[in-house]
Image (tube, rainbow, N blue to C red):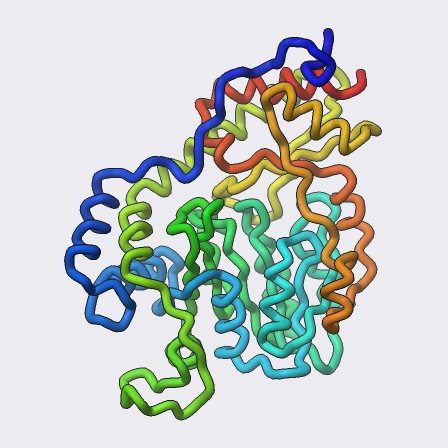
Length: 387
């Protein structure tokens, strides 16, 4: 069978769903109301930001939330609010988006890049334990691709060493671990509303936390060092303006009503992929497994491990030509010279290096297709990979 890359007929000619999806009626109504009100900023007296933070706090099983301009700023604010200081070390996974490390640098701290579990690709508790020094102040698990990290194991390490835990839940809206929502399993959790995420306002983020004192400190970091309930021009500590706007909150708040249905749609697609991959002779591709304790995977990405030798660049080009474009995934953080030159410390990360060679992704927008569309992925893989 001739590959589409070599002039053959592509497996799929139908476009994949676009992201973000069209605005629904509730979004249009609330955005219009906010625009008409003129109360666009977070400090002008509107209610959309307050309603959004309260809703996220409830859904995360926490008491408090602070909406911010993006999740990188949210991670920075959470670290600063929890007491991470210049020179402290924060352990982050090696297989993650660069912002997990740059947010630590923004806080004046040192990212320590530790390896992931070779199976599920989430931060490994053993690697964290090995990376701890007298300067370690916090751990930053990432709920990668929409599945929850093994938080019991990581929280146990943190408890033994008196470390703070900041969950990077940027990709995991709606995910649960042992029946509990992610974001509320550590000292603070941070969600993203960037354009590719499961809920988006183009940009944006939100921090949730359980303790009132932590909330007040994080709120102050995001509000120019003001004291909650204090004077407008009183700035007892150093802070920044990191706030989300009312317009962005108006796009996001109604989305919560359809989030569960969208997660279920992606899960249905992923289940069809797994069934289809099992039928390929030799099973050359498998879905990266969920970490222990996963009770709801929000499926921001579908990570696929290619288990046969393959030319990565050719494979990605050939899959795209078949109408099934895949993403090459993350390079190891420790291999990024910009991070190490800025002071990051990279631990040995063989599992991450293997993942960067073997793992590819199917993006969230594709997972929103009808589950029958999974057959196109399976057919393209069977066509492109060496038999």
